[in-house]
Length: 164
Image (cartoon, rainbow, N blue to C red; front, side, top):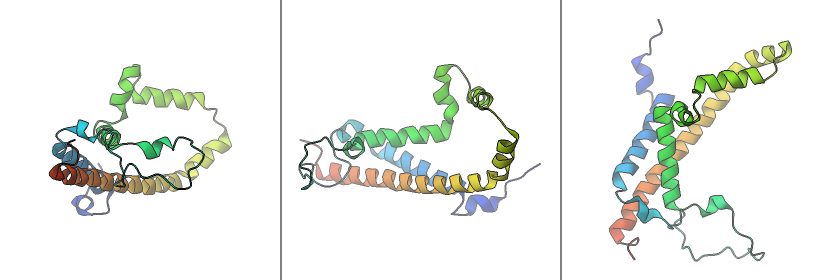
């Protein structure tokens, strides 16, 4: 029987700790932001909304990712937190198939050759470490974004800048 040592929970660089930090930041954000609708149409960046890039002479609409407001970002962070807490199964339940059933179906649809199977198994450790590094990076950025959103909301509400 495999046991998880208590040292891994206290290690600040463990995946579990990084996940807990993000969830705590998202919970703090959720508890602090009492009226999320106040975040609508507030630019994510602290720059003035009237500032326009001087080199933008072609009158094309800006990239949609740059136009995300604080409300959409708030909803995104909450959605990611819910996916982490409840897993993808809850999201996939609306389609009727369980996550395991979908994974098996996807596996059956892919043709398997002997060489491909050997390559996949020998590269599992590399794939694991690649995705683990990515997960650490993404969770760290999401934690910082949740903290930033919370602090900016406190600063703006405290100054009354959202109330117009």
